[in-house]
Amino acid sequence: MTTSAPPQPNTRQGEFRIGFLVHDVSRVRRTLFDAKIKHLSLTRSRWWALVQLSRTLSRDADQGMTQTELAEKMEVAKVTVGGLIDHLEASGLVERRSDPKDRRTNRVVITELGYKTLVMMSDVGHQLNLAALENIPEEHVRIAEQVLSRMKANIIAMLGDADVPAPPTAEDPVAFE
Image (cartoon, rainbow, N blue to C red; front, side, top):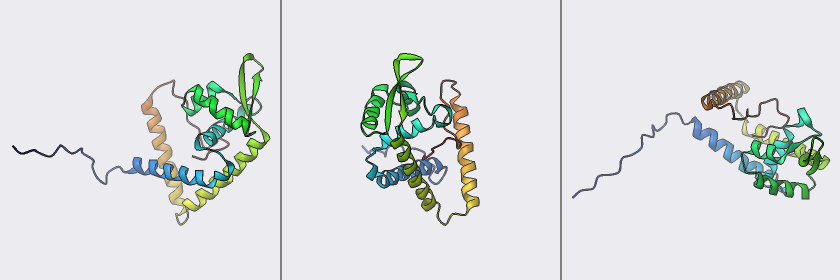
């Protein structure tokens, strides 16, 4: 009895590789970013939490976010965020403050040291962007941004779920990713 080879998935080699490229570029950029900020003693999840907190700057800088709000932004469990906040607080980057509207709730706010760290992270991110885009004409970069923005809008529209939080925009104060 002969055994036939298992059916091969239709991978359409060479067609629509953009999803893989976007993922791979993001992954290797995060890895390089991690290496460049290693001296700050921040893990990826900790710096991501700090970045998410920074996105409230234009609205409620002195109010911060609750642990629940941060967990929702990061798409992780509240208990996970609790540990991240503990580490960030021990490092002096954030502090918990009582919510003036609800004494049972704490809000997480960025400290002065946290702001300085965000500036350093932003500088590293800027330098990585310059290096990654070296020898790519500015017009090509703008076209890529337009294509990715349109793809993002299309995907959000496909989600079609009113409960899905709006993703950060280019106007957010700190955008590393």
